[in-house]
Length: 81
Image 1: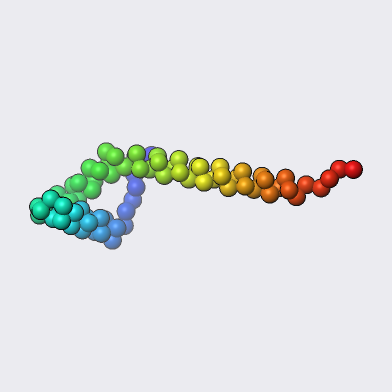
Image 2: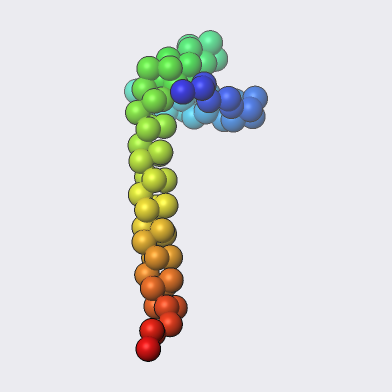
């Protein structure tokens, strides 16, 4: 799996969310560096779980859509006399 590349804006947003979470849920202030470190840690250590689940979800959608298209094609068949 290739690493996920986030834009600077995405990273800044996620870091802001991490900092807000620590403040809101734990009553702790977390610095910019620590929040960026956590982002990198979660991305490298657990990101693959989310990535793989996303692939499985996408495969299931494709499977369902393919089945629906097959059914549509079968309804279009002309009777053979």
